[in-house]
Image (tube, rainbow, N blue to C red; front, side, top):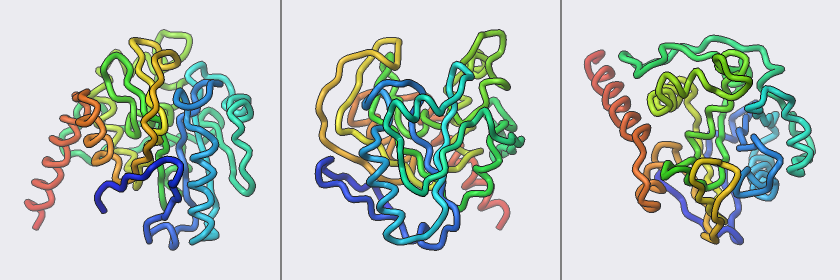
Length: 252
């Protein structure tokens, strides 16, 4: 479908045709912290996405996030003003987790991931993330998927967070995650951009005034190029995509 670029103040979400046929649409915001956009996904952009879905579909709309502390996500939803009518708000830690197999013939690090079963029972998956660069690494729509993984399974020896995954090699983990939990659409709210050194909650904020929509890898790759922040996980995803193409050709 290519990447669609909008001015933030004019953005109206026009869902791809597949949304009209979906019975259940799942939205994954970036809502790890009780801090406003661009640290997290703003309620404003989520409203626009929900309204766009409603215009073409009566599908159930679900929203899910996990908290790095392992505590409840609901207080953060409230702080961020996530008060959407007819949207079921879910917390990763309260979900039923299932082990999902990585479809890559040669996974980079993780042959399977534990993830909420609601991902598998949804017909259309949308990741909605703010534009952040932390330590010169682009934190965009694919990085947003890490908090779908239950902290209880992946914290390692740490009190919270996804320590175990970082110790394995976060670039390889993110690349494997892209293939294992294939999201259909990415929306990056680049109304503002946050640039931080280490902490994803602090940094310089600048106005960009854009919203980008498209396939997650395509969007993140294009934005990483524009930001001048190449990312190892994007290179690995490119390799993985080639791996799958070769495999598909061999099957024929």
